[in-house]
Length: 386
Image (tube, rainbow, N blue to C red):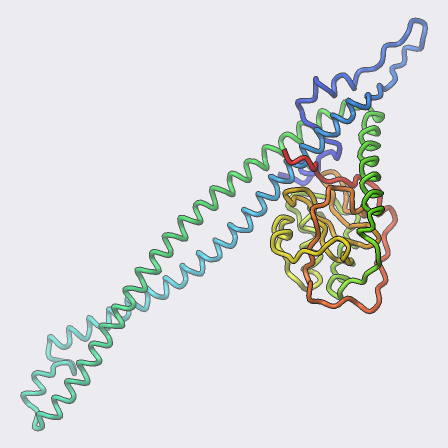
């Protein structure tokens, strides 16, 4: 699917609201007799706008969950494919070695039968001037034959084991491919819903869209004020050298569009931004936000330092990079750009640190932010886990 389809309108809502919510909102208010016939955009009631926003966020959450599941399946699929290729190479070598050993054993057997090999010990024993010497030679040759037979047997067992592993790997790979197809279908279904919603939103007035934006901003401001008032982010800390480099990279990406599955350099999704920033700093971290949450060491919010990753929503479906002073750098959602946002723009799950053993810098100068770094939508996906 193209980037233009993926980067759908930032204010997407469920198509099912077309008649239940959006239709009524899009209607113009009736004009009293004698008044101007010019149609004025209708402003949505607070309750209707709230319902619209809830549907918008729910759809985003479903989209991100499907996308994260797809990315996880894709990562696992690639791992299994690499394992299968490695196993196939080992199996090929084992079979080649076995064929060579069997060929050599067959050649020696034929030569012995034809009386042309050193294994014709009975003839040599009868003709030898020194029977004891011949017996000694036979003992040595018999031992060599037994060792060769044992080697062939070991190779045969190895081939059987490798073949069993190859079949098991193939079954697992088939299962993983089926899973990846299911996740892709789920992702495609949600993207289709977003595409339909994009058409629907063309009928909303600027006033209606402005009301949605106001409600989003209002929710973010309230959550941010509550978090700062709690004292959880008190204190100023310096990043590690790697964290400093990762953060500088993330800041350099500000203004680039969010695109599902993108890892740069022209566009990013949320975990694509964080994983590439830390890769640029010299440390590989998991690709998805869920894996980052599951595999990286957790740190409490009152110990956050720049470069740490802040994870959101109960299913860890969104991630951002801590900038300091209660702010993060993130790729928020489809239709938005990489930007600086309040840390509480989305419901916090916790934070992780890719380099827990690294000491902080003795001094720290935050990266200079480009103009307009805080403009645009801050919220990612709904906290509703139902």
